[in-house]
Length: 258
Image (cartoon, rainbow, N blue to C red; front, side):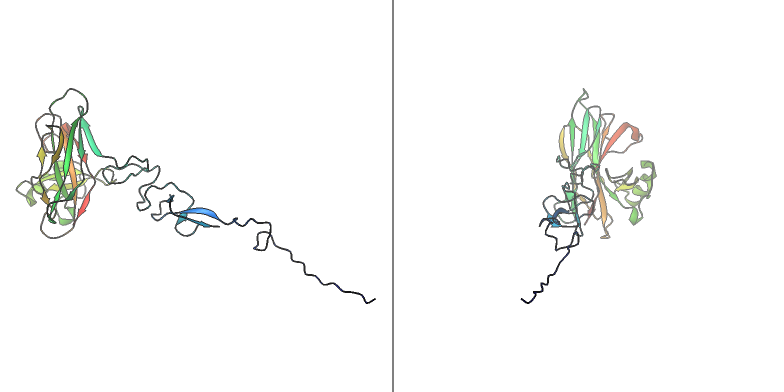
C-alpha cells in the first residue's frame, strides 16, 4: 500500500480581526446622534450607527434645538430670544421686570406696516399688592454707536443723553443699557424719536408707535431693542428721568434690521 500524504492549512485568527467567528455581527453598531451646532448635545431624531463617532455626531441624545448652540440642557435661559435655551420644554422666557406688584413684559420687535418700519408692544400686568396706579412706559431704542452716536461703554443714562439729543434734537434721548441675556456690557442706546408709550394704566398690552428702522437714513444695519419701565411714582416717565433709581427696566433682546 502506498502511503497517503495529507496536507492542511491552519488559520489562526487574531483577536478582533474580521475573521473571528466569535464576534457578534453587530459589535460595531453603536448609535450616534447628529450635533450640527457643535454644542456637544445630539439630536435624538437624527442617528447613525458606527464603531466610532462619525464627524459631526456624538453619543448624547438630549438636544432640543440642534440649530442653536446656546440651546441645550443646563444652559442659562435667556429671555425673548425665541429659544428654549435650557431645553426644559417650557419655551422662551419673557423679558420682564416687577415693581410694587406690577409687571412689565417686553415683546419682540417685528417688521412694521412697510419695509421701512418696525413695531413692538409691551404688556403691563398687576400681579399682586395694592398699588392700583403705576407709572412707566416703553420705547424702541437703537444701537447707533457704530454710527458715531453714543459711547461704547457707559454707567448711567447721563453718559448717553447729550449725544442722543445732539443727533436727534426732536424727541431724541439716550439710555445706558444692554439686551437681557446677551452678556454684553452696557453701552449707549438711542431713542431717535419719541416713539414711546407712557403709563402702565390700564393693564394689558400696549402697542408702540411704529418707527423707521433706518434712523439716520444711511441704509446701514441697525440693532434695535425694546426698553420698558415701571416707575415708582404714578407719573409716566417713558423710562427716563432725573432719578433712574425710581424705576425698573425690562430689556428685550436686540434685533438687527434690515
